[in-house]
Length: 466
View 1 (cartoon, rainbow, N blue to C red):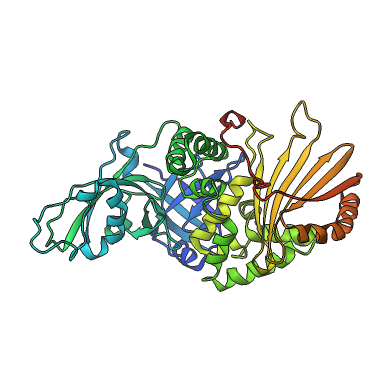
View 2 (cartoon, helix red, strand yellow):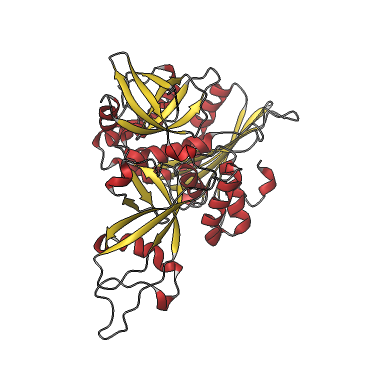
């Protein structure tokens, strides 16, 4: 690149300290990914675990990976030079494999991932596991797919299929042979039983021409063993329609829809090791349960659901959201929630999903369906949800809002809970009537124990989603 582009960004006070230290060191090199590009050319750059606003004198696209060098670091802005990336000059599909040696003692996490790929009698054995006098044979070299990701300091890690992460050696941190978001085929070369080190090979896989179709294939293969091909493909298409990114956000969103994990429980677990995030999450729970509209809106913002918009507007100048305080995995968890709130233009009636923490370990799972934007609309708005509460167990509800009125149905499988809810439903009905400005009718009934979850969506109907 004869005339390197310049990216200038405001003083990044809102970044985590480790990332800010990198940006403020003149001469330092770092990798960044373009998270989004606005119509006016404004950028959001993903640097480490932070996101900063920026501008560039050359066109960039969302998903571009940049090799940058800090040229200036003043009180008003930071100027970054875009350095040439050797991989950009390589012909398509010509990415060379990367090899490095790893002590055998550090190989066990990867060996555990590779073992299921082998027949039982061929699985590699850890030192000391072979029977005395057994014939010493070098194990074959199976492979698994991994993804290169970054930690809070912007250092590259290898994320394995189980979700565990393996640090990459120092020599790979100083080159552009790998970049965050790369999907790689991971292989361990056959190693003699008495060897102290083993050679690991990472072969970057070419980016598919249709990245959305590639993401659908990856997500489908990940979910199909448990859900079946049809449902897995439906979830994969639903997630991919909302955006393709190089990080783990789409996979996490797909696992949430597949009910493999709870984003609320995951956030609570992650916040436990980040005191500021834990205190903020506790305050958010209280505000979400307050019933006050302004406090609820503030709580959603402090989760980080609108973090990128606030960064672009300059409203967010410090790490003050759960997304920015709960570490890289917390950022990905909130990112998955943001993705599930999106509605692609091709399918405005597709549901949006929201998962919220409530006090005392409770949580809410919500599904919103809005047909008001469609040509044949009857202005139907449906909110379905479940509340997991310590005192009452799971309570499900459905709110159907039409022009002529609103209908609320509340259900519980517990007869005693149903009687209690019936005695308390009138204040709720009256409050909804005042808020919506339409007549509201409410019923409370007992649900059969085998009733499907109120938030269930039939993803097997793949033609519903673009």
